[in-house]
Amino acid sequence: MKKFSIDDAVIEVAPAEEFQISARAVPTGGFRWLWECDDSSVEEVSQEFEPHSRAVGGATQQHFVFRATASGVFALRLRYQQAGAASPREVHAFEVRVSGEDR
Image (cartoon, rainbow, N blue to C red; front, side):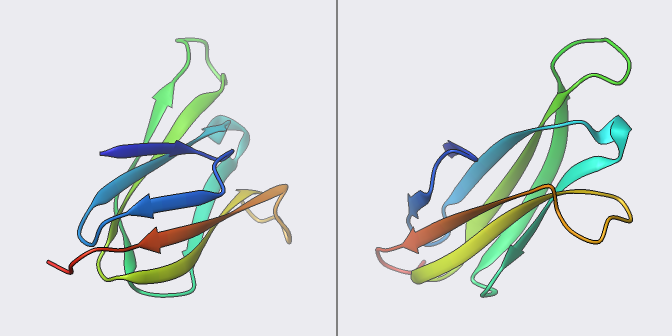
């Protein structure tokens, strides 16, 4: 599985290939990453938090695993937002390029 961070702007994968995007988060402070895509050809497979330490309230890595279901170029965005907030603190956009034979 290919792995990316929020610093990567372009993601290149094959159809049906899974890929991971990871970003630092503080979920105990109410902050988490939310995703959105302009097309249903990218679907979420799983999501998990990996603590950096055992300290209460510390930062974690939030991992998203996605699957590209068809060829094309799609816009995927991650928004870092606190629950109940009107607008996100950060937004990261990715261009997902899916090429090769559809499986």
